[in-house]
Image (tube, helix red, strand yellow):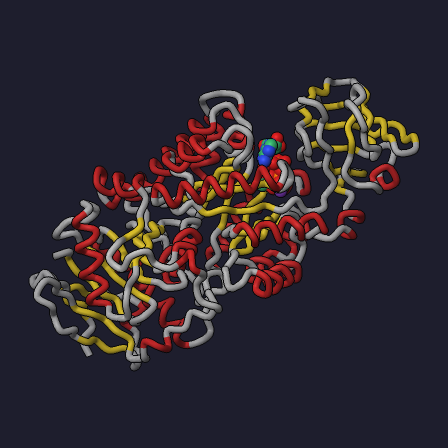
Length: 578
Ligand SMILES: Nc1ncnc2c1ncn2[C@@H]1O[C@H](COP(=O)(O)OP(=O)(O)OP(=O)(O)O)[C@@H](O)[C@H]1O
Ligand SMILES: CC(=O)C(=O)O
Ligand SMILES: [K+]
Ligand SMILES: [Mg+2]
């Protein structure tokens, strides 16, 4: 058995002393493929049969009942890629493609087709719909516009529906009020009464009937995680009188928390279901409209994630919907590992998290959540207030740029805009800032050759899963050491692509998959450039086909060095594009 990998350039023989493949694994052997006239490569292949390349750990992307009609490949010779990726690849080459994914919350500022189109052109990978706001008809229109955009322009923008959850929040402000200003020293009334007509002056309705009973005089009331603060000074039936101690803007449906003797009052929240009856109706709506992800607010345990996943499996007709756990409560931090293990991804929901734990603990929590997600191979989103000042101003603060940089540096999968894109004045500019800061940090890694060095623990238990992992780990390491232009991964359900993404290699990952729904879901993961392409079990013909399609569109060129891995054949192939 040879311990070297022969590249297609005959003069170069590569020794990989630290490669996991170098270990004396008797089941690994090198096998020379018959060389087609146009393609020369040497392949490294595991001796287990291709059929055993089980990817059962991927519940997110596994399609048990086959693909619905919409997902049928349109043409066997076409490749689906959006115009932005195509021109980026043509103009700047592989290396400069962005690795960090971008999510935009859609709201009144961005719900029109042209506005959505501008966001997609600006790099939006996922559109988030927050079910706390807007009607189902409004959300349906947005979902359909995004779908039209994908169909017309080749984008793979995924839709993430975010549940309202049953935490306590303010009601709508009534009338045309977009916000209300609370000044220091003013007395405001928080009430469980609903208003028939216009909102009485300095009065705010509260979503939770037990509010007036639970809150006590002397408690501190925090709006939106402390953006505005009040002291509870008097209770009169359903009305709670509060003195403003920290002034600020009250936004419709802002989250409310109350604190007693320096800690969060949680007894009440524990009794509310994580998924409310309204959330279940929203979830049915999301299934009917074919959303790609459901983000669950205020997750407390893995149980609710498992429950939702069985519900989706039973009701979504074989369509896969990824479940994202929002980490925004103390309970979710306590049960972090098991929650993330049960989920298909997680969100560091810093807005509410910062209202539940002291603010100075949020950065450490973020770092821990990002790390656990990497370990367990789940995409992770860093969310809230990344560019908060850009709701009002066209340039970010230096501190915001530093915060975005830190999230990119942690190699989180995705960054999310909230109010900046939903109702801010500069949604496109905010997206541009996320994009340019991501690109800058990523370029710095390349310039400094700062490869991700974190050793990753094994996740799969079945031997074929372990082999897939080792192949992806080795392929990524080889990609860094050889300075290859791209890793190609052929994946039916996306699992193999996520394993390559997990290694955060220093080159883009072209993920070829044969369904549009898997293509959209891959768009949440770090470094993956998802293409839809119909392919066969025969890797040689897949590669030849991909090379000719991409070359004809100017996205790759002869001589580019590529590493290929796939679901179908447990092998690593290294080759120059013919
Ligand atoms: N669909 C929508 N319709 C109207 N306004 C919206 C919509 N989505 C978001 N917004 C506005 O953008 C703001 C920020 O959005 P964001 O999604 O962060 O909501 P949030 O209310 O802070 O709750 P969450 O904790 O779920 O993120 C909201 O407070 C709201 O004013
Ligand atoms: C995104 C979200 O829900 C939060 O930050 O609270
Ligand atoms: K929400
Ligand atoms: Mg929240």
